[in-house]
Every structure is written in C-alpha cells, then in structure tokens.
Image 1 (cartoon, rainbow, N blue to C red):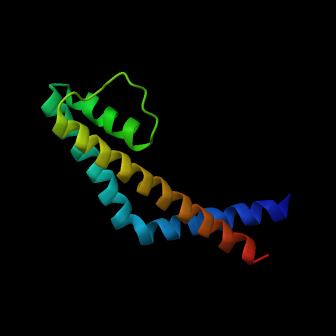
Image 2 (image 1 turned 120 degrees about the vertical axis):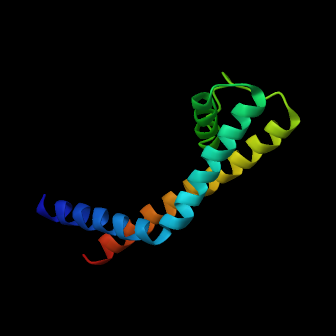
Length: 107
C-alpha cells in the first residue's frame, strides 16, 4: 500500500505543477465559456446564471436541452463554446496523463 500512496502523492504534486504551467490557457478557455454563456443569455433573454449554466453544459458536451438558443448569433456562439469545451477537456486530460507518466516513471 505504501507504494501506491507514493505514486498517488507524486501524481497530485505533478498535477498541480503542470496545471500551473497551463493555467493561463486553461483560465482563458474558462473565460471564453463564461463570457459567451453570458452573451448568449443576454441575446436570448435568459438570466445570467442560466447563461453560465448553458455555457458549461454545452462546453462539457452534456447538452441537456433544457436551454436552447433560437437566435442565429447565439447558435454560432454555442458552437464556439462547444469547441472551446473540447479543448478545455483535452487540456485537462493531457495534464492528467502527463502527471501520471511522471508519477509512474519514478518507480
């Protein structure tokens, strides 16, 4: 068990270290999702919190369908949110894989 704890601790340390490296890109992608969600909520006449919710649901490619944009500009912005969310997810996955590689490599 001690071996697994060491690997897990190195993984968490590596995850934090690599997130510090990509944090500017990560935060920019989060900012795009939130900003576009707020803009869509303004265009569609939704509450701002609904727009942020829509942005993350769309960005994480969940798409519940409870909020649907009807204006053409809002739909285009929703596509941009979707692509941004895919980039955000891929970046986070890449950081996790890199941290795991580093944690296991030291064994």
